[in-house]
Image 1 (cartoon, rainbow, N blue to C red):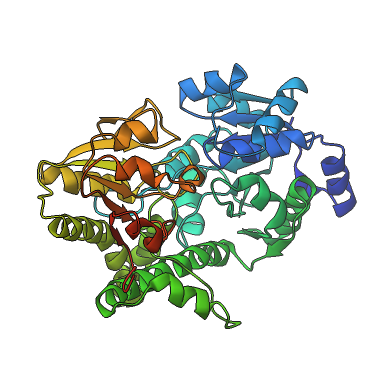
Image 2 (spheres, rainbow, N blue to C red):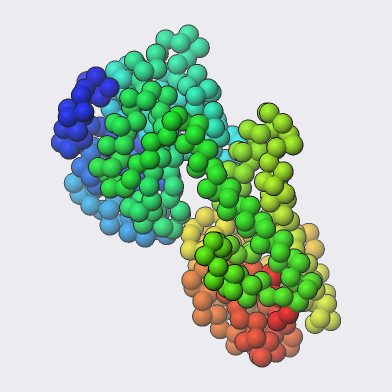
Length: 459
């Protein structure tokens, strides 16, 4: 029998939390869901992760931690398995009826028309309809647009016959995840969380639970849609500012101004927040969050959020600009980009993670293929894997060998001490195009290398 927390007083609720008597289910054990589940289990709660990916479930249950690029969680994983506080399951029907708290950490990608796809959440919502009965608390950690929880998701859980009553048979709350891939453990321990609910008496219960597990501040929101709006705003703020810096970089290249010099000096002003240029904005968050806001706004007025639309256009244009920089460098070398061999360094959407979701590198690779370019790719997080149709090289030297140019797309730490001698010895007029800001243009040019970099005007 599950515990109906809403029927208990505050001291009884606190006792359940401190005694770890609550059973936790985490639906979706991917990049965020698995570390979240491990944190609950590590705190002493019996926790079961649910995922339709049978291979992932088997991997976890066999003791093989899948997120090798996520610092610290491998130790937590080993600890909770040893204590037998965590396991994974594919069948949601076996887990939910015996769970007190159900966390939803499911993907919310975009479709081909750049419209948010909430299929995973809605499918799980419908499956919960026949599994909830005793005031269980469903907490959505996935990032969604404002109003989705109160409308579509609530309706899917209630069922077409509305045989489940919110606030009685179940409670629905949100606590949007705020962790940055590659820094999840750090963010879990440091960043405040937001909590909202369609039933306000649930907010302090969720707050007490998360405070116990993560030890961070929980900020109560007046409702679910406000909490979701805060989450989107923080990410779209970054999207817009990156778009602004990217557009400035295009201008600065023409004016002979170095963007990084400008940013470094601008940081001296107390209210300036530095953002940096790059080959585009990727990953499962920022591009999707922008379109989530745009999807909400177009239902009201398609002229809303022009600044978000413009930022998206600029950031989506950046892979094309990378090709233009490469073509310009080849023009200086008096060679043709067509039929050349290009070494691409880094394909992850951001540094130091094993993830290519909506990665700018995919568009860059497609554009180069259209120009009949031969590609050799190295990324330390994908060695020997086949990504975007290419087998990843085993080393930087293998990728650079016999290449006409190097295109550094993602600034992994492994590229911090890039050996220019490898490039200098590869061709008579070697070319390096840097999208990351890691390379000092003067150092490169002094070695006779033709250099181009995003926003690197005047150097």
